[in-house]
Length: 159
Image 1: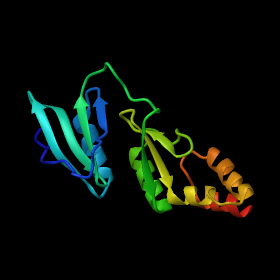
Image 2: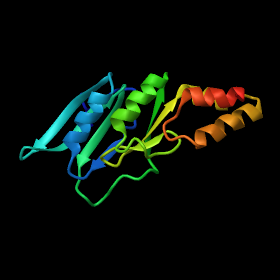
Image 3: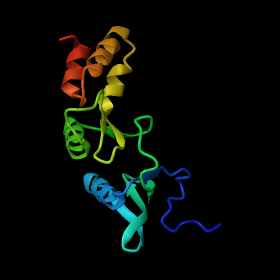
Image 4: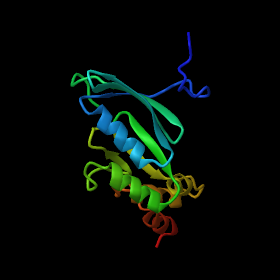
């Protein structure tokens, strides 16, 4: 079996996304949102994109213009580890179909795909061995839509 010339030899498993009728629009949005992103291939049939392969931050994805038989569910989401609040804010604003919706850093984009836009600080603060501190952080996070690092730190410090 011949390897796909666009494949990453270290990536054995590739997420495969099924879109209704807006595959090209979705891929173009996703590669515009992330700085380290590119379209690897778009296969057209009759002028319309049927399949696409693209990369976001080194992760390869494949996608199909499959029609309305299936739709995305929050049971599968794309988790994005963010270094700063600015990165959280930027991704949230670019990806959220409705920035006022979502819960605990989870959002749905306009194509119905679920994303988790999560700052690294959340894991660090929740991982504190002091159970009271980590519980306060968890309780604060459960009240948030978009994760607010300052709010997490405030809960952690009990201020």
